[in-house]
Amino acid sequence: MGPRFSSSKFISTWITVTLAASLLALVDGGWLASWTALAPARIWHGEVWRLATWILVERDPWSLLITCVAIYKFGGELAGRWGERRLRRVVAEIVLAAAVVTASCALLSDAAWLIRRCGGWAVGDILCIAWARTFPDRVLWLYYGMLRLRGRNLIRVLVGITVVYAVFAGIFPLLPELLCCTFAALYPASRWRA
Image (cartoon, rainbow, N blue to C red; front, top):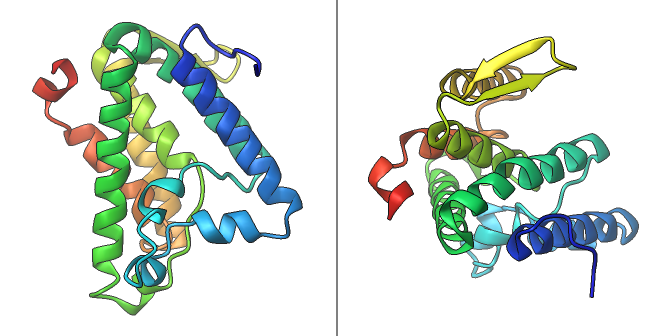
C-alpha cells in the first residue's frame, strides 16, 4: 500500500499517479510523455485515451510540485465538501471538454494541429476555480502571507495569469489551459451541487 497524502483515497491516488507518471516520464527518455500528451493529430488517428491522460504527466519539477499541492489543498477540500464521486465527475467533464475542443480546433488551424500538451497546470486551474466558486468568502494567503485573496478574486487572478502566459507563449500552446479556466469559471453552479 502506498503513502496516504490526504484523508481522501481519490486525492492520495491522484497525487501518487501524478508523481509516479511524472518521475517515470523523466527517466524513460520521453516515451510516457509522448504517449499521454494531448496531441490532436494523434487523437484524430484513434488515440482517444489522450483526451484524459494529458493531465497526469508534468515535465517540470516546479510545476509538478504546484500541481500536487493544488490537488492536495483544493482537491482535498472539495472532496471533503462534495464527495469524491462529484469531484471526479466535475474534473473529468472539464478536462475532457477542454481536450475535445482543443482537438476540434486542430481541424481549423495548423497551429492547433501541432499542440502536444502534458501537464497539471489545467488541473490546478480547475481545482482552484472550483474551490473559489465553492468557498467564495474563504481567504487564501499566497507568497508567505503577502498576498491575500478571497475565493471570488482568486478566479480573476488565475484567469489573468493564464491569459498573460498565453499572450507570451501563444494562444494555441496554452489552449487547453485557457479552455479549462473558461469551462471551470462558467461551469453551471447547479452541477456543482448535483
